[in-house]
Image (cartoon, rainbow, N blue to C red):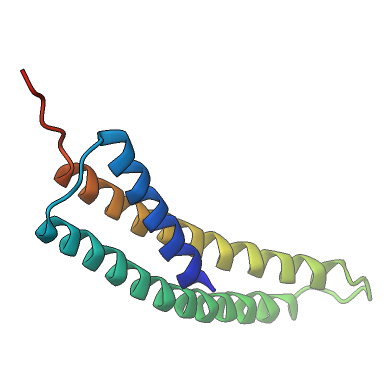
Length: 118
């Protein structure tokens, strides 16, 4: 699912940049932009897998730490552990996806310099 979101946001961003700069890229620049979008979308899938593994490691560490806390029978600790794990995993995914999208945006801006007619 993350790949679809990243892919659509990258294509939307490139389309908006083309509209803002009012230019049409050459075939070579189009191929370069498309390759960057595809590569970053491919990376997004691995980011999702890595974030899930990272969340599992954090969750296990927190649950191991929970064993040292005196048990009161209150489910609040379990709720906090689950919420913390989700926040850490989704936060890491968000940061990396934002970075991947930003990279494509900067690459597109460098390529799409408008030509000023005098």
